[in-house]
Amino acid sequence: MLRAAADPLVVDLGYGAGPVTVLDLQRWLRRVRPDVRVVGLEIDPARVETARARTRHLPAPPEFAHGGFELSVPGGGSPVLVRAFNVLRQYPEAEVAAAWDLLRSRMAPGGLLVDGTCDEIGRRASWIAVDAGRGPLSLTVSVRLGGLQRPSDVAERLPKALIHRNVPGEGVHAWLQALDAAWARAAPLGTFGARQRWLATCREVAGDFPLLDSPARWRLGEVTVAWAAVAPAGGALSAG
Ligand SMILES: C[S@@+](CC[C@H](N)C(=O)[O-])C[C@H]1O[C@@H](n2cnc3c(N)ncnc32)[C@H](O)[C@@H]1O
Image 1: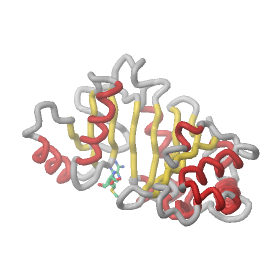
Image 2 (image 1 turned 90 degrees about the vertical axis):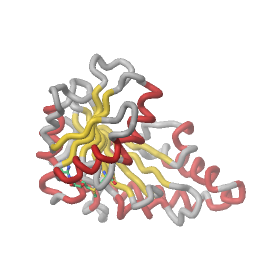
Image 3 (image 1 turned 60 degrees about the vertical axis):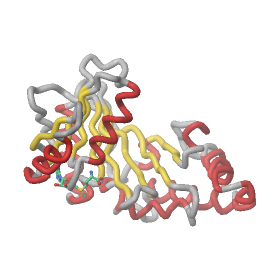
């Protein structure tokens, strides 16, 4: 998607106290698209000043600007990719749909929003991929396999759209339960390492859930399931 984009504009929305994730994103995405333009947007103006001051010395620093869900980047443009990590978790669940709608309306056609949450050091993460045109596509769980007790350890790091839905009767609850059960059954494979155990877990749940990825991603401690399987009951956040 980024390779094919007419305007390779990417936004790290709500990047936080320092420029770290914006720099990281720029570094990785340049490998795919050397002319990528990465902009960090923050609703807190003091954080914009801090990020600018800390990156001024760099040869080609990312841009930083004051902004929010309306995605107003300096000079205009519609981002093809928006990363918003640990941002919507600060908002009430009832505001997620409107925030997604506003973000989607400002993104390039075919663009993707990554609405995610993680723990402080990124060992437990999850994110929802939201297509600008079609709405939510998938939920990805991504964990550091070493030291993982059970897949549902990620429950407390679910995005706001799902974190209150980890209760019986909801798809995301059934998903995490299925992962835990498969993980328990795959325990003997732990002898060969947590990665083999995770691969077996993913292979097993693939029989019952619409997975959208393959062993190449599972090997990294990830697994991605189609949104339809985990969307909150009631339909407020169904695919568009
Ligand atoms: C918990 S920090 C997350 C920082 C970083 N993204 C991370 O994952 O470590 C949340 C940040 O989002 C910013 N924020 C909250 N609402 C925002 C909005 N509507 N638009 C842009 N930034 C926002 C806050 O100012 C804060 O810096």
